[in-house]
Amino acid sequence: MVAGLREVGLAAIMVLIAIAVGRYWKLPVLKDMAWGSVRAFIQLVAVGYAIKFIFGMESLWLMALALVVMTVVGAQTAAGRVKRIERPFMISITAMLIGSIVPLATMLLADIISLDARYVIPLSGMIIGNAMNACALSMDRLASDLRGNRLAIETALALGRKWREASGQYQRAAARTGMIAILNFLKTTGIVALPGAMTGMILAGADPLHAVFVQLIVGYMLLAATTITSVLAVEMTVRTFFTRHHQFRLIP
Image 1 (cartoon, rainbow, N blue to C red):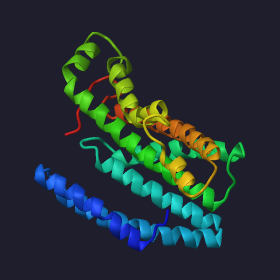
Image 2 (image 1 turned 90 degrees about the vertical axis):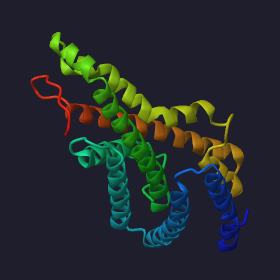
Image 3 (image 1 turned 45 degrees about the vertical axis):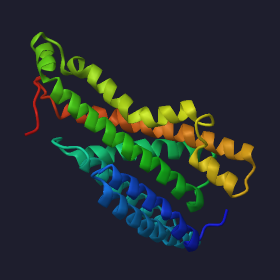
């Protein structure tokens, strides 16, 4: 499979098809589709040059800087998806940092990958991207459920339950929401669809069985990242809704 500017330009026909379908159905996302496609092109090309430069330098400082930038941008994006929560950025970046560091450090310590920019940056990008989505989904679901079930929660508190007991079912549901994507992936991978990393390696000419093993490592890595991120995001978010006296409060 050859991929260059010509092929990308031809592939843009699919963007036009998507926009045409959206316009026919009067979907309110036409500008997002068009601008998102252009922005994706600009960002990916820029990132491609940046990563090529980092690969050439083999500098740990540049590699660390790239990961910090990716995490900060991801945390800002996740925080921006959630409304009326105290310190959403701090919650997002803390949950994402821990959720990303644990699986990455595990793979490095287990010698699954080496401390090489060629491995660390692409895998970290996958981890951070999935952690970002898990964080945003779990925070948003929890905030929505707590507000929507205020009466039930306050009733439980009035009956003497602690805040953690009164909100427990909503915490678990929110954490599960953040993990839905990876859980669906693990259940259907290889049956419904071939995952991205595996497909990319096969297209590049790698042995299919080797591609399968790499994809399994990626899947387990993402499971750890999204689980840790979702649980931490929920744990930190739920605390902003209760006082130390077990009183429920809403952010104005």
